[in-house]
Length: 115
Length: 114
Image 1: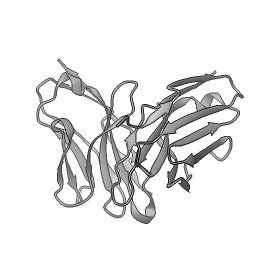
Image 2: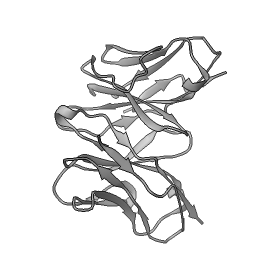
Image 3: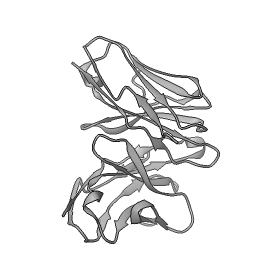
Image 4: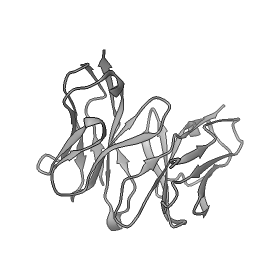
């Protein structure tokens, strides 16, 4: 069965610092990978996605993520965070094709940016 | 584009009552997904429709929960005889099919069962 692990429940960084949020997946093939962000009392907003090709993908608001097949990882990064980036971030995978398109989510990482 | 619309945003029911949650997908999207979010269980897949047909309901509780998509413009999730453990945020998402897999989420319906 597929799974997603986000090992850090909470991360605190100072405004202007760089950020990495970790995500590891378990699936026998290469899945479709996503990062979503959730602000308080809102739904999930898509930050970026990886399907194939260049392992570094760019997303909205200067976020990027790097896929590593050897490490089964899809870490989210940002060079310089802003206080408005404080939110909960979810990594998710979809198997696609005949295995279906439902998303399997990690437990989320709550990011607090100190102003 | 209005995005995915979910109504109501908040619903409070008494134990044993019925709750119906509504979702209007993004126009032109042919797939609709339902998820449930709780502090304890996190985000869980419930069910999925494509072109109004049920495709995968592997996450739906076997009793009391049902979902329908009577037309391309809305889907409903019905919970009969609600229990306190049904309290959660229910999220609806829609997506294009035919090669595009990202799902776009609505704001959710917060269900509280007293």
